[in-house]
Image 1 (spheres, rainbow, N blue to C red):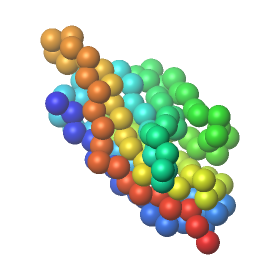
Image 2 (cartoon, helix red, strand yellow):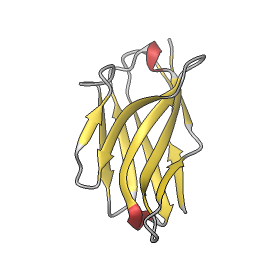
Image 3 (tube, rainbow, N blue to C red):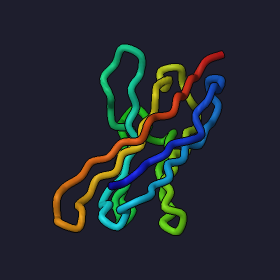
Length: 120
């Protein structure tokens, strides 16, 4: 199994910045891609950004140019740098890891989420 623990959420004013972190532990050798998703009040969970094992990235149109996803394999940690935050970025942000275990079975793990609130 893979355990994911997010941190770094909080309250920030519009235009401000936050950096989220996600530390992975357990059977991390099988991870092929990680990502950040979010779920705002009354909304469905949506993709924010993903990063593959070879560091290819993908972003939702709503965050392009404002958010940056990265990973530090030496620390088993993924980051989401969020700049120029807007009230509509308010959501619970979830870390996700996809891959295959030692028996080549696909897995899909989620963290517990961290709240980001953008408000003046």
